[in-house]
Image (cartoon, rainbow, N blue to C red; front, top):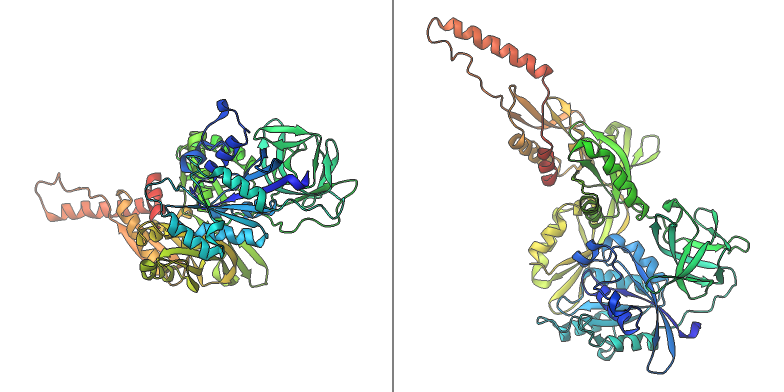
Length: 597
């Protein structure tokens, strides 16, 4: 059985045709009937189909009769392509022996293609390069083949050309998979070791763990233990995906399938964890496991305060299928009650936001995204803080560290200058340059994560006329000179606008924020001072002038002292109003400011 088993993954940049190629594989192997056919069958969500992205990894097991007459058992894992899901991609790849590298003939090698190839090489996978979309009118097939040849160091004969949409050349890819990708190795020990490379939550069955068995075998009703939590459960159901779930009595070494144990808490099943038998446990887990931790944080508030409970329920449902997403209750004087949410990255944040608005029909406000800072206190205690409002006073902090990323930027050669200018503006440092082709260069840059959250991608696309692409990986925390910038309206602190800014940019950010607020805040009957402060020191100020009321309009004659008396009375009233008056700021103004900060 092992001899005729092939475990492989499809890796590529976003929208290069991974899910479409998987569709053709399913059709050729007759895994789906004509009645079940639809585009991107492995993508369950409408959002995945509309945006051409894969958000969750989807395994499927098919049988294929090759030209040599043998029946092969193929386990396909369709992985996410975006940088935010890099850890999930790495765990999916570690469940395979090979990978089909798909490159769009109209776009060529992109930054995420490079990053995914690095992950595949780290896992010692056999790579089959494939150029897709050769039927497109703007396909640059020969040029793309040349760049793949230089990048991977393979001969041109090793590169296959297909049209996943039309089905051209897809059977040849299956034949190449059978010939080149090695079969799973026989486990050296009989202790069960199975890798959890993904999971799904079912309202009736609980958590469904996706497994790749490396050693031993797992039978129905056996008791299993998860290494990371140390908890044990009974395997109530096991099986494979065809692509629907299909029960089996046993999963053996080399198999890819699922495990159901009636686990109701999704946090107990972690991606990358190892499952073993309770009665005969393995001595050590499979390598590569790490906790998935949110790196980007943002406040989420309902536009209408009456929808707070509905938003809370919606976040709870999303959390069930997404262990990397986190949320906790927070409140703001300006925006009311809401939640502080943690995401893997900006695309992850965008997906959660869109799902809440579409699936649960709740309009929400997102505050400006920020990162987790590491603070070394005066007593050497290390704190991790994601909410700028909770930052302690500067005199209590010995050192502030922020997360840095290693970024790969693919850019046309003639746009290299403007790209480097953006990198330097964002406090990035160029560490390596590599020529990918006569017209493309790859820059390796080390840059703070906080600097790329807001507009870096948009600026990169702008200066490269849409041809630039980027990918990044978290490397470490580094000391930085950061300041806590607070905004005061009529001497009252506005928590929603508190930000952590690098000291070189703090004056610019302070001036821009107060000027923006001055233009947006409606006039009141008293003047409103808008101040930006750092550690009690005001660094920028603007004033919203009071509405003028002509109190002397009724004075059609008489002595000037009569008018002076009314003006003095008005002055005293405005002074008292300023002391007790409340500044009413519409929510949409905060949204506008947060977009531009």
